[in-house]
Length: 283
Image (cartoon, rainbow, N blue to C red; front, side, top):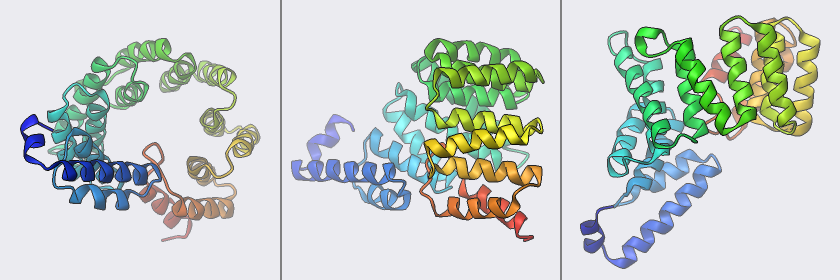
């Protein structure tokens, strides 16, 4: 917040605003995005952190245009904050996914530019690096994607976090149809971090794609031992079962459980779970 704004606002109001912002953050961390949004929206004065949280709340409730608008304000107030810039890229990325054919390229371009900017601001921001990698793996070259660019990003991820680097290399390998190398790198990532439930989920999903269902289920079981109530595990396991046409009653139960969970920014949107459940129920 600008100095003049601080001078114009009574100290009691500033303290109240800080307390409200702290409560809004607490609710956000509990995945109560609606509750957090209600508080932060009513604050009379917002600084960069306030607008950033407002944008993240809108993002998590699926209002991506409002998310982008709020995050633009956060970035304008704190242009060198890598996390704010990354979240703005995510908002534009989601807008691109739902945009008309006439605007999708513009939204996607903004997403890429902000991911690149977030990484430039903080080369150790692993979340921003992963967002940039995902974009490069999925987008065509004329939109700023491509496997050569992804290869360079994988190298940067490896410098920050070797285990994450092996996972990133496996993603690149799979895109290149180099399945043996992809599996090797997934297993090396797991060896470096054997308590990371996400590594078991990634390996289980990969093995299912290869039709190795027994091995896949074994890794899902190990993930469940580590984190039985982990929402992403429920969704991915259900998704794998549906795609392979197996255990469909189990998949249905997993999706229903997922829809009752508090999900975070790294979890699949509940809209995707509802779509998958409707498919199972013939809707």
